[in-house]
Structures are given as structure tokens and as C-alpha cells.
Length: 325
Length: 284
Image (tube, rainbow over all chains, first blue to last red; front, side):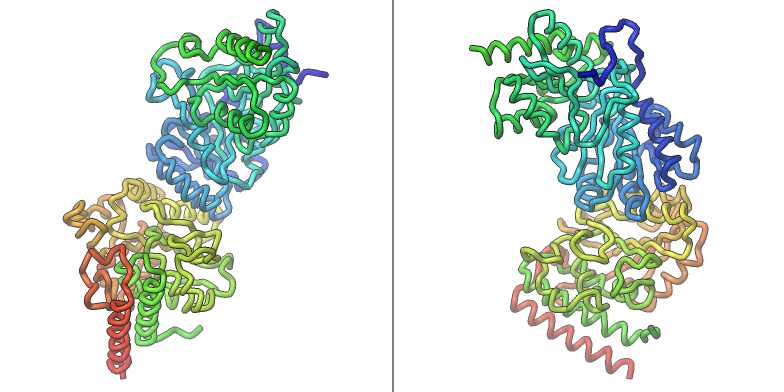
């Protein structure tokens, strides 16, 4: 089987912040559909909306530092037939305005596209206040909401174009730091579909967002340990691609979930719920263990909080041992 | 449709008040004071001010009305039924299982509602989004009305939207605040004082017109005047009497969030019948 992704062991692997892909995708979506509009809460360049703003100044809306207004203006724009992308840091949107999203977007069923940038501890030096770890949880519990966490800038670009055509409320998580580009132009992206990035038979490592790269690194290490890990990239947390995921788990009989967010309520919870009801197997969750982050460099923070490839590797050994004994 | 006379409109408002009492009594829960005091404003909007078509709620040239304080929705349901959006008998399903008339309005359940609301402070922002989208599309003939409660404007979201509307010169929004001076915990000026209320809105860049919100003619005139003010969004600061029309409910914050019981409903309907008779004789 041809791999869907690049060789991640290449030391010269290209890197780019995921949000850059969103910026390009939004501009392209704007070219394709005149109803695409964008609104931002005083973080236009950080969230990469400036590319859209420069191209379509009349379709860009500055909201100021007012995240409650950001999403509710978005609801109104959608009500009048627009396809609004609304962006801020994830800590503020959907961090601050959850109820407005619940009522005026989800229950009201308006196809607003909420973009939460700078998620995860890898935000780094800004510290815990800005390292959003609960966004996936907050968005996943909302009926009607689609939740997407792309693994790299190329996928974010594809996801943005797909969101512009999706008639449901959407949330997409972006990250600040440069991230290895692991997908290619031909890697498939469909909302609601998980992809097998590495085929294996001993353990399923199910990852989302930027952590998929770390899962692949771990799979590489595990190969040298004599364990063949299957890496399932879940770009869409909701609706969850249960079929692909359960098929993998049925084959491997052991699971490690990996996310850069709270293990409560995020991907780990979603997979636990799925396996507990359908196919109980040994499972470990890699993620933030019910605590906040702190200032530091992204790499050292990932290591400190147990989110790096080595911790994923150890967790994989644990579940494989448990499966065999 | 020929313009209705003020007397005809007052009689419609009175009938809407009767329906509100019947609905709330039948439902056994819900809010009394706000819906009653908003009956004149809703009558003015649906029977004179707004362009809309009860037989075609999605008519693309219609004006938009957002009810931001969703708990006052009984007045909207009663007005819509009177206007012909649905049969009056459906009003008695308010708050019941399977009803299109949810306790707080849900857009997807009943055509013509425009938005889902209840949690306070979000309507003005949505009005901004709609007005902005209309401007982007070169649509200038559609007006966006939003009704808010005064207590509701404790919410910060309202003031975010107020700044935004002024900054974007969204003059095709007419916001109406029901200044009935009550909220659940008591009089607004005791719970969280709003005064100097007019000055606050003006400081946020709005043109404020103060009106008697229980005087239909004033509401209609102010809505017309709002259309002539093109440099700013317009707020109608509509002073109303909480529970208007039912003597034992008027001015009393305890009626904010409770319905009348059977006995109280009978008394209220008797009062409203007398009031209807007065309206008829006054104009003769």
C-alpha cells in the first residue's frame, strides 16, 4: 500500500505553522464563493486572516476584543446567507463564548465556522492562560457541531475549503508553532473520515491534530522494538469515523489515543466511549492529565507533560503487554 | 393591506393580551409581565411597521425581527397567530411536549421566528450580522428590528454589539429596549442600576428616541423616524409598565417569571374585556 504521507524520518522535513494553511485556504475559499466572509477579534495576523482581508477588504469584519460578539455576529451573518469564518485564539473563542455558540449557532443551526488558533501547550512561552486544552471537549459535546483538528498546514488548507462547503456549524483547531508537513497534496481529506497514515497490526495509535506527527515518530520507534503500530489520524473528532477506527482496533486489539488537550472529554474520551460500547480492549490515553500547562519551549513542554513520542511509545508497550497477558 | 386605525390596533393589542393570559394559564409556567407590556410594540411592528408575509415567512424582502429576550416569546406567538402565521388554537400548546411553541423560541421549530433565543444578550449582535450581510449584498430596503429587555442589558455582550453597530454605522437596525424597570430579582435600579440609561446608549454612539412603549401611535411614529436617521443606529427606549393591562400585575416584579393561576387568569381576562370596551367607546 502506498503511504498517504511523506517520510517523517527525513531530517529535512518541511515545517510550517498549521494556521498558515488556514490563511491560504480561507483566501481560496473566498475566491471560490463570494458568500464567504471573515471576522476576527483583534488577532487578524496571528490567525492568518490577513491574507483574506487584503484580498477582500469589504468581506472582512473587525470585531475588536469581543469574542461573545464575534460568534453572535457570525450567527447573524449566517442567518442572512453568508458563510462566516470567525477566528481568535482558542482560549477566547470557544473558551469565552461557549454559551453563545451553543444557543445562537448550534441550537439555532447556523453554519458558522469557528477557528480557534494557538491551541495546546505548544503555544509555549505565553503560558497556561493561552494554552487552550479544553476546546475539543467543549465543542465535542455540542449537538450539530463538527469538530476538526488538522495535523499540518496542508490539511488545514483542505479542511478550510471543505468547511466552506459544509452546511453545519464547524469548529477547527489551529496551532501556533511550525509543525512538520506530513501530508501531501494528494493525501485525502474528507470531513468525518479518519485516515490510516501507518499500517500495523499490533496496536492502534489514534491521534489528532499536531500530535499525529508525534504518533508517527512513536510508531517508527516501536517498529525497532518489534511492534507494528497502526497510526490512525482522526482529523474529524466529530462526527467520529467509527467504522475506520473500530476496524483498526479489531485488527490490533490495543489502543493508545494521543491529543494535545485534556484527556477528559477529548479524543481519548471519544475513543474510550466507542471501544467501551463496541469492542473493549486495553487502552491508554496520552494527553493533558487534568492539569494546566505553563511557560516554556514547546518541545520541553510536550516532554514534561508526557505528550512526546517516547511517552506514546511506552504507552503502546503497556497496552500490547496487557493484551498479551 | 390598508393601514389599520389606532383604535383597531389597540383592540388587537388587547386581544393579544387576552391570548397571553390564556396561554400562560394553560401552560402553567412562563413569564407574564414582559409579554403583556410588549403587546403594544408587537402589535405596532406586525400590524403596521414591518414588511412581512404570514403566508410566506421566508419572503426574501421581509423585514427581520429578532426577539433577544426570548422569555417574552408568548407575545410573539400570540401576535403571529393573530397575524395569520398559524391557527390561534395552537397557542394553547405553549410549552407542551411536541409543540412548535417552545418555552423559549426555536427558529427551526416555527417558521417566522428568525432566531433561537433565551440566554440573554445575543440578539443585538445577530441583528448586526444580518444588517452587515445585507449591506455587503447591496440590500437597502430591508430593516432589522431587535427587541431587548432592559434587565437583559446587564449582559456585556449587548455593549460589545452596541459598540460594533455604531462603529459600522448600521443605521438599518432599529433596536427597541423594553424599559419596564423590572427583572427577576427586583426593580432594575436595585438589582443593577442602568441609569443614566439614555446617556449610556448615546455614549456608545446610538441615536436614542424615548417613547411611551404602551402607546402604539408613538411606537409607529418612532419607527418611522428611525428610518430617517441615517448616521447612527437607533434605539427606541420604550418606557412600558410591566404587566401592562392587568391591574394586579402592573409594576410588580414578582410577575416577571410566573403565570397566572386559574382564578387570576379569570380576573385578568375580565379586566382586559373591560379595557376592550373602553377602547371601543373612547374612539366612538
